[in-house]
Every structure is written in structure tokens, then in C-alpha cells.
Length: 445
Image (tube, rainbow, N blue to C red; front, side, top):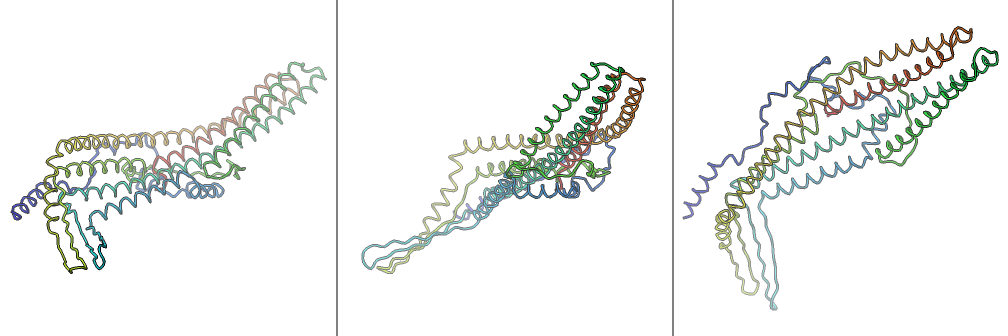
């Protein structure tokens, strides 16, 4: 009888060796077409593989990023999730090993009994093995999550820092413009006294100056708000943020998107999606394994001090063996439903993994387009500012000699202010596009 059982078990194991199959990524033909309109270099070295301190070279920004990596709450929570997943994997590995227990009991004077028991779930059909693999994937998934949090943190710190630099630049431009308006008001008042202009010109200049003053107050409020958010992001109390200036920033002259396949290994969110797919794959295997018996070999040996008897209980071995063989028969309906649910979750994970790749490709394309557009806009802004500075100087000179109307001067100054503010904004867009591309390509993984 035992021989027949062993042969049946061996036949079932051989016929269901798919239960031991490991996850393998399916071929995806569309990956090579993720990038479009690429005028940046596509080589094996991606900007996303470069360490963050080589992309963001400002020493003050580097110090802030290091503080954030140490104190940020979300990143520290992500690190603890990794430790939690490591513990779960360790528990899954221990489940594959035999277990033992010891018990002792005292009775009448001079009597004492004790027993030692051992059990081992044979895992012939891979239920525990797939659980261990699922725990391994969960650990890798938590590590990918930690990387995603770290990438997002570095990008957000850099983005906030450069936002402060942009606001500082706009505040400097507005303050300088306000001083220019004060000089224009004095000039117009002198011309009015000489009868070369009227009160309307003076009032218009004063109104423009007040508008700039209001904008300065708004910029100061925004700077304070960004500084407070910046400190909260780093996990520190609100304080002034030490920083340099936008003019001191050095951006990479060239950017490389690498090859599209890099996104599979470098993008934390894409890795998370694929690991979720692998986890669903092993869940399907575990659900299939539930159709087959969980055979647990166990036994006990004990002794009693009163009569010196030593007893071995082989009955538990047979009982557990029979119970393991019969268990799947009575739970077949529930097991079938569990398998269908696992298969549906596997298909969902496959769709989500594919979509995560498509979304990653969109982000890379958008970041590259933003970078190329911002570069061109900054060049145009610089030329426009130079022309408008000359226009302001010329109109002011002509007005002093009575050859230009005050409206021409006011218009030229307003246009110059707007152009300078736009240049600062476009310069920030250029920096932000580098941050976005760096993050879209995996953020220094």
C-alpha cells in the first residue's frame, strides 16, 4: 500500500512540475518604440544611471539632499518596509525546514514524563516553495518602492531648491525695476515742472511702481512658503534655506536617454509593476498547489521516569499522512475559486506592467521635449531682453530731449520687466526638465 502511495505521489509531482517554474518576463515588442522624436543621444549610458551628485553640482543643494536622505519621514518608513519584507522572507524560508517541539509534565511524587516531537511538511507540490518565492519578490518590491521614494525625494528637493532660486531671481528683477520706476518718477516730475509733460504721466508711473511693489510682496510670501515646505520635506523645523543663485548653476550640456530597455531595470515604478506581476505568477502556482495534498511527516518519542518506559508514536505519522492526502478533496470548490481569483489578478498585473512601461515612455518623451523647448526659449529670451534694455535706454534718452512720449517709456519698461521675469521662468523650466528627465529615466539607480 505504501509503495502504491509513493508511486502515485511521484507521478503527480512529475506531471505537475510547472508548479516549480520560475517567473520569466514575456517578450514585449513595443519596448524599442517607446522613445520618439529623439534628438538626444541614445547610447548605453543613460542620464538616469548617473549619480545625483553629478547631475546636481551645487554644493549647497547637495548638502540639503543628503539631509533629506537621512531625515525624510517617507524614506525612513520605506526603509522599515524593506526590513519588514526581509523578516517575512526569513519566515518563509524557515517554513521549508523541519520543526520540533518539547513538552514535559510532572505527576505523582517520583513521576515525570516528557516527549519530543518533530514534523516536516514535505512540499512535494511546491506550495511552500512558491510562498518563499513570493516573499522574495515582495522583498524586491519593497526595495523598489524605497528606490522610488528616494528618487522622488531627490527630485522634489532639487525642484524646490531651484524654485527658490527662480523666485530669488524674480524678486531681484522686480526690486531693480522698482528702483528704475522711482528714477523715472523723478525724471517725469522734473519734466512736468519744465512743462514738457503732464501730471497724468507722473501718476501712471507711480501706479506702475505700486504694481511692482505688490508683486514684490507676493514673491516674498511665496519664498517663505516654499522654504517652509522645503524644511518639512527634509524633516526639519522651518528655517531660512541657505542657497546660491540661478546664475551659478551649471547644467549638463548633453543628455542621454539610453536605450528604452533600460526603463525595465532603472525605473523603480516599472520594477514594482513587474515584481507585482511576478508575485501574482507565484500566487497562481500556490493556488494550483492547493489542489494537491500537503503531506506533513511527524512523530513523537517520550519517556516517563516512574516506570522507565520509552514510547514512539508512529500513529501520528500515518494520521497526518492520510489527512494530508484527503484534505484537497473536501476543499476543491474553494481551491478552484482561489485559483480563478489568482489568475484574474495575474492578468491585471500583466496589464498594469505594460501600462507602466507606456507611461514611463511618455514621461521620458515629455521631459526631453520640455528640455529642448526650454533651451531654445532661454536663448530667445536673452536676445529679447538685450533688445528691450536698449529700447528702454533709447526711449528715456529721447524723452529727456522731448522727442518721445512718456507712454513709450512706460511701455518699454513694462515690456522689459515682463521679458526678464519670463527669462527667469524659462531658465527654471530648463532646470526642471533636467530634473524630470533624470527622474523619468530612473533617478540614478
